[in-house]
Length: 148
Image 1 (tube, helix red, strand yellow):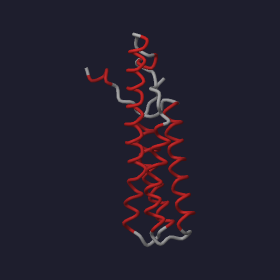
Image 2 (cartoon, helix red, strand yellow; image 1 turned 180 degrees about the vertical axis):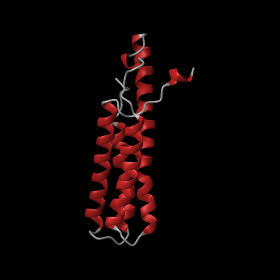
Image 3 (cartoon, one colour; image 1 turned 180 degrees about the horizontal axis):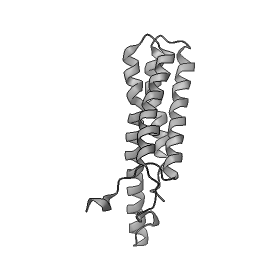
């Protein structure tokens, strides 16, 4: 069942991700202002990309289920939460690994490998948080039925 998602989406996930990326880069590379902009947009990009992949997976599973069973899947209902929220974890880990390489190559406080591991860990944690919120119904799901 879906929960009121707008507060969770705006405050915790989208802007919270941007601010935590900015704080992470500011702590690791205090002299690199360009990298702060990368990390400011990295976790919101993760969220948008992960949400898109989540719905693509749900759509694909729905199509396969409809062709096999000749009926709509259970998650096609009004208040159902689509499957495939694990896309957040893989998307977040992958994008933050790329950003982590950029941050780790710049002069930083810890060195290459610890910085890269910290960025990947941050991405994996953010992805797990998004997955948890998606499973509990706190993330917005685009509703095609409301467009009519």
